[in-house]
Image (tube, rainbow, N blue to C red):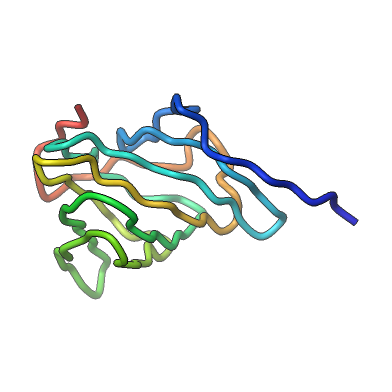
Length: 131
């Protein structure tokens, strides 16, 4: 049996995600991982597509927009506190923060993030400016 774990996000980011967001790693189990993400005010992420994982995001602060595209659909979704979205496997996505505050969300990655090479750069909706 695996031991219980408890963790709070650190003050400084643990990593920079391939899309340009600051990542604070939280916890993982066999089926998935959980992390905290922050994009600076007015910033625009790099557009990417994941090779093997899918995600669920829940926005906790800030406002912005999320672009998602697949072979079947494309949309821009307004995001902010309380909004929850999915990033299905193979979805191209990009997001941007409104100028007044950072865009902050927590996300579950299923399976856990495998590391370098998982995110593939793609053409996005906006010019990237990750801040």
